[in-house]
Length: 580
Image (tube, rainbow, N blue to C red; front, top):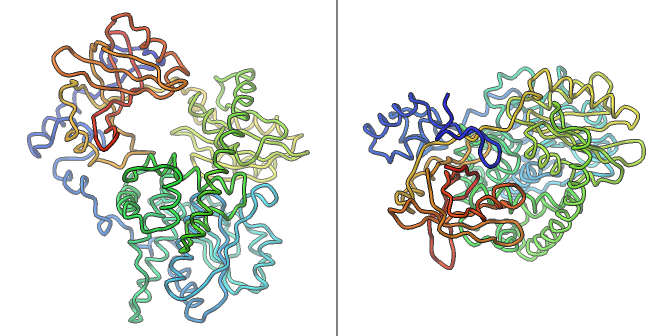
């Protein structure tokens, strides 16, 4: 395919790829049959939507997309045992992972139980002292004082810890990749069990918990009892889905879309206080969930008290919510400082080792285990390679990895654990955690690199920049942007549409902050359009455009509304450029 606008290598080293001739034809047909704007029609065609499906796609209804919870194995048993504990006023414990997905999952259960007049003990393991997932001492101790333990966002690989919970029933509600054998729990509800068909593999743990509560409410209705309002809890499901980087397709898209509406009502006191300290001044979007709220909820599990996030999300006390939000905001600032130090050291080490292999990795003593996952994500984004970062404390290192599209990191890490090269390891396609002995580090990373190379990870070049079409500055209005937003929400698995502007003159350019670039550009026939390129001076894009010297450029990026002082103006979130 010919490069779009002839751009074989842009300022950021990428080849531009536009719609095919067939996609153009389908977009024209979409416009004729639906009357939708061409820009929106191109987005729908890129998503595989046909004209007859367009109305349903643009207004997704959760009732049409939500799967029957009983499609998941062990669901009826899990919900039945949960309700028996509620009706019998049994002692219930929730064992949750320390990230946003785990905290949201725990909050869903705690809030539902509170509405039913029940309480639950929250237990979140310390990332450093206990590590990920159930451990034998904690499970044994919980079993002494509880009749039912619900493990959320963890537990699928915890055979020995669950066996240690003697005298209590254990129910696992998880989404991490399962092994060939399941732990000895009463029920393991997980769309990524080996014996599931994979059709719901994109669900995060909070969605699995939500489905269990849907089934619980159904069983209550059969007994003539009305259960708690589940639609009001979708803000937590949306937060977990976006923060856990689950693909925004199918039911996930509907869950997030509805959850954003619920969150905009500002009825959950914990999220409201967190949004205030994060200085969110407008209705939430996936960006806010992924980059403002999510990191703050995560901060407690990364470098503070592990249960802070779950407590914030589940509290109904305004004073507690305000205190927790302030503490998490402070911890998030501290986390960023630690992350920056580790990132710089890890990148230098990885560059020395080479960035063209199937795996980019770095390890050192004292790297905080709470930031290794974030740093792995940064290296993955910078290199378009799977990345693993490991922090050692003595002879044992705890690490985290992030993958790229088409490369299953979780399965490879799980295989290493089965082969004995790791003390333990697991995860899902895009993310994994591991623990490794110092004397097995090189062998483990070499083996992991080999397994990922077999999946083609070493053949990942600079990513093509995929564009949805060509626009003129005069066509970009608030109305058009709002129309395009109807195809959202956008995020993992459903990238925001990108458009190109051909042969543009830069009418104004200035540096903003330390490394951002603000420009205005025009085709000479309509008013200039503003654009912002965040981090432009961290690479070649900023210097190129800032010193344009009157040259004309093809520009590419995502459209958005810039809200400032009560006004909304169209803006291009500039991502790339090429000399025209």
